[in-house]
Amino acid sequence: MKRSPSAELLDSDAGTPEEIADSLADLRRINRWFGGSSTMQALVETVVRRTGARALSLLDVAGASGDIPSRVEAALARRNVQLRVTVLDRARSHLSSQNGFMKVVGCATSLPFRDGSFDLVGSSLLVHHLSPDEVRVAAREWLRVCRVAVVVNDLRRSWTHLALVYAGFPMYASRLTRNDGPASVRQAYTADEMRDLLRDIGAQRIDFFRHFLYRMGVILWKQRPPRESLS
Image (cartoon, rainbow, N blue to C red):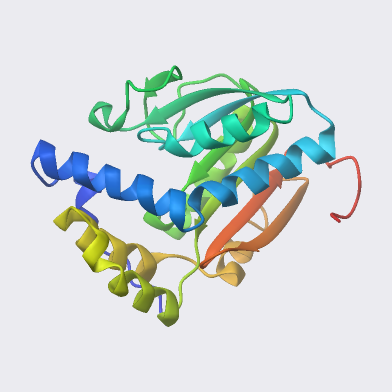
């Protein structure tokens, strides 16, 4: 299946406020039920396990309502690990007032923060929106702003994944989601494509993971992690 970039309606807020709100609610359900939250949780827990950290700061890039870091924060708290979250999104209308996170409006490829401002920089379901050149620019920028690692949670492109998205149409509340879901899968990267894109961006080590329902996890280590291999 060849990668096929296309416009997603939520990217440009091409809908009424109600349609945008419904689409964001769809995304929260999809993340909760189909691997978005659990993939990011697994990535952050890997960093915790490798570093032994008991407190971490996380910048969630293009984080919208912040539902994914909210679930990760709660899961880590049960293990007595504190996660301090800042959510950045390009659109103020996407940011939620329902959590206590610090919120910033800004561009994912040109972050308004100094070098090493956060322990972790994370992105969920953002990379497939970016062109190959933008992926490289964004990854270097995220490495600049983090102190420990960048954690990336995204889709893997396949015909089966596309069929599953179409099968889910009855559960989508917004027409934006019915457009954007298939578009997301068609323009997602494969694991091999991501390896090629991230090969020379300056990370000391890159670890790749496959997760539930065609999710891909990537950890870009700013410094070589304590142990050479993951268990």
